[in-house]
Length: 317
Ligand SMILES: Cc1cc2nc3c(=O)[nH]c(=O)nc-3n(C[C@H](O)[C@H](O)[C@H](O)COP(=O)(O)O)c2cc1C
Image: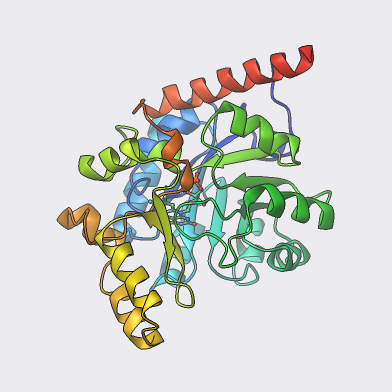
């Protein structure tokens, strides 16, 4: 069975499966190269990467596959302009930008043939990105790991609201899909592909430490928390850090006090210092659906196979 959607056609991929950009986890060539080689769209997360490392990783992906891949950049990153200059020189097939407006980069990347996919978490931002000329959107729902929409509207509702507003816009839906039934659901709701973050977080290729992966594997669907509303809301696995943030919120602590605790730790502390108890263990609700750590190529094959089985079952209804 061939998957032929507006997104697979636009991006030139065989399967409507996108590996979400995840700082650290996909900030090396291994994960995106494996996903792209398997027929999905792998994404290099440039957010925490130094310029020479980005250049080397893009070269390594190209050495391992001739299939399309994406680079992701949160636009608030310090030095984002320098990264943009480098990426323009590297001419990636796809740029997935997040956390900012698209006008600053669209024209220059489209001029070099890079497809520009803008990440949004509201209908209003989707309409703005479409009006600015984005080629496609990643639409993030409240289930997502990392930065969900501040109002936590679920992906199921957000996706349909965006498709109602922009029926002709190719949309990649992100947040909570995790498996083949999730992929089919996203397609049924109007997406041309689903993006998977947490599902790829436990792959051997993902650049986060094993204790982090173990927490994802053992988590239930209710084991994430959303903290930091007002200054960079994140969804992360419950641990000492999220307990502390929630205690401050319950106690009515000032924004300055909450922000100080929120900003005192980063995903980097988890990755480089192993701070699994007091660091930001970013993960989505679908951590509760991930219990087998498969290599990335097998995840892609597995997702496609499960989706085919679901579609066959639906056809028999
Ligand atoms: C550990 C982690 C790191 C993330 N880092 C980024 C990032 O650097 N840039 C970005 O645009 N989104 C980032 N995200 C969000 C993902 O791109 C994606 O929207 C989300 O993981 C999808 O939801 P899911 O985890 O339920 O599949 C991150 C998510 C996680 C779990």
